[in-house]
Image (cartoon, rainbow, N blue to C red; front, side, top):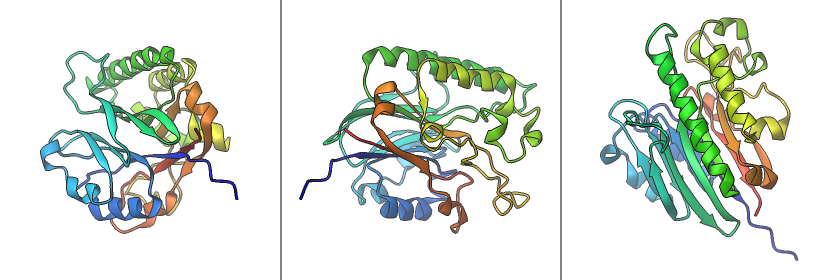
Length: 267
């Protein structure tokens, strides 16, 4: 009997507060058992992150936290190497929005990042140009990684609705920073570097929503948007076996308003 080829399973999930959502997140990790999980909006400093709950599940941690807001983390069942906290291309990092590490497994090495891009609302405030500047810094870092010709996956909440097909009711998002022409152009610039939107490439359907608001019965009406992505290097995209969301979690008790997105890579 032939041995199964080892793969690496990556997940990304905006958990909307790790301490508020701890039971939900740990229950999902036990069930889905990803090799690597990128978390966003953990909303806590590293010293207050509930490490033991994840270490007990066999995960190593890289945390870039912030009190009450933002915050990103990488959980890995394999050792984390070359950990980078904050975007190297962003001067004066003042918000915890990016953490990156290299994970080595039987399926090979992959560089993984947890990304939490700024929301940018309202568009007539200083938050909108901050969002665009941050996205440009992310593009600069991705451009610097590509010549390394390695597998990398930038997973996270990008706070961008790329096309009208990525929203159930796109007209509702007119005038919102997430659906602004500038944010959508920033997403295209990332893709045009040579990155691959994993779920879109694998399923061929933009309507794979990852976020449903808590209000207005959005979940019950499937009034969602797609704003969470895994953007893959060409080498990682060539190794992709599957990608998609786990929407069941949105119906669980005390859910995040986002759901996990998963990607499976071959050696």
